[in-house]
Image (cartoon, rainbow, N blue to C red):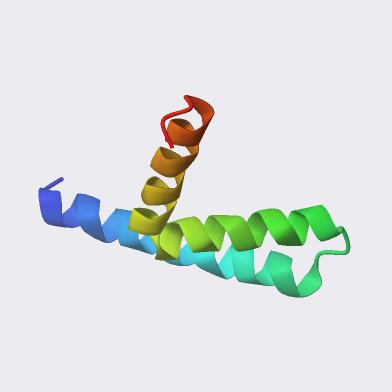
Length: 65
């Protein structure tokens, strides 16, 4: 199995996860499930923003901000 195969499998898995998350957002009856799905989609779409926000939160908790 080459690097290309691994990357194709990763992308295929990510597509499946996105479809499942969208389905949860559309059809879940529990608000928290929908909210968790939205958060995960946000993390997937904007990983740099998530990392930036986590860094800012850590600094705030340490009293550096």
